[in-house]
Image (cartoon, rainbow, N blue to C red; front, side, top):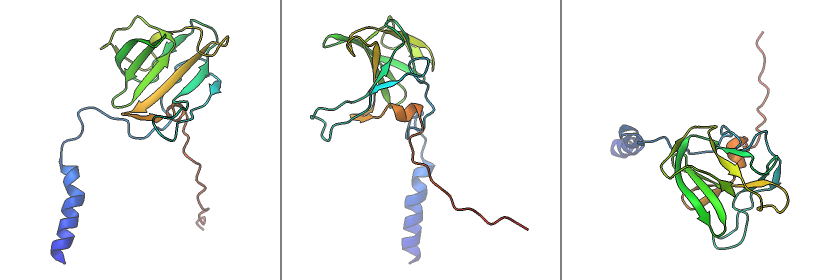
Length: 169
């Protein structure tokens, strides 16, 4: 019995003894990033992930820009990992420490490897993604998993009602 309790304790404590990650990774979205457009934009098309990776869906959100050439800002600090054209649209991707944001169509002069701070201008919105309405497509993913970008600027966790506690005398 003592041996099994000791084994369980070792399994629970061993991960705490190792060194932490070299960089801070984002584990759970909590709504503490900033919006990539200002003022806070309307959401024209919501996140609608496909059931399977190869199926159609909307792997990000479309945000209404005030006009074409609206500045796009980095929602969190990171490093530019891609700046170029995908199919026929200019795209910029920023790695925020394990979570990547991609923006399109965005004209940017930033090069791969450029460090950006939260709020830095990373480019400007180009026309064409939402027809005549100026908009920005913002996608977020961790590895191959697409995440709802809104969960990084809004706390989308459900509200929990706690019981009332008895008041003291």
